[in-house]
Length: 115
Length: 112
Image 1 (spheres, helix red, strand yellow):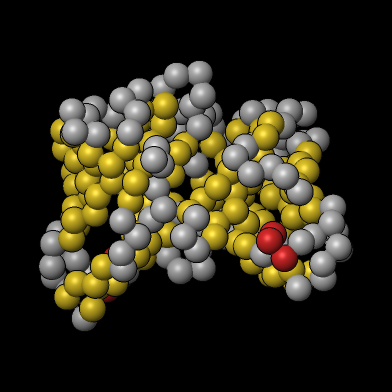
Image 2: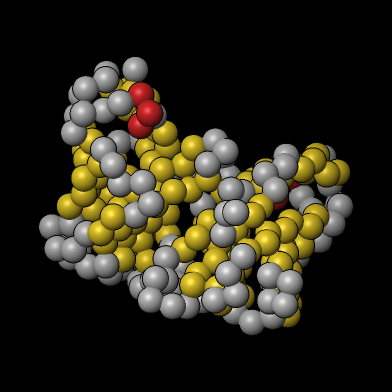
């Protein structure tokens, strides 16, 4: 059981380049999330999805786009990377949101550096 | 004021010590309280969750919630070097917006 898998694990981009981060989950979860984690800032929600074909903005959505074409996949896109987007990105999924039985399962993270 | 406050530490203790990790929150509408553990260069993983005020125990770990004080705690007994990690508290609003709200995390080092 792989859980939540993120691709790639590491990436270095030049300013202005674009890239897509892929998240795949095999737990048939409805909810999926993209977070970024920065020192002193904690986990911040970028975008999330409550089901296939739906997406919504989180706390820090600017500069990012997402798509959820298939239930098991959640893609995070950076159209024109900026140094401020240097961060560790985590994808997570959950059966539902809210409630004590809602465990969010996290991927291993993608370390992105924009130079 | 942040909705969830957590002292980032770092906290350094000798092996075998009792560790106390704490968070405070501002909104009495928060109903679910969780503790996640994050090892270096890994994603967070759920350690414990509680719903009501009081204690919940799981092995060496005890989660405590005091809703009257808006205070949540995680106690680790007989701490081990393998407990060295960052511990994040998270709360959930039971209202329409039921997203997780995270503390910044407390870095813990247990020294052999």
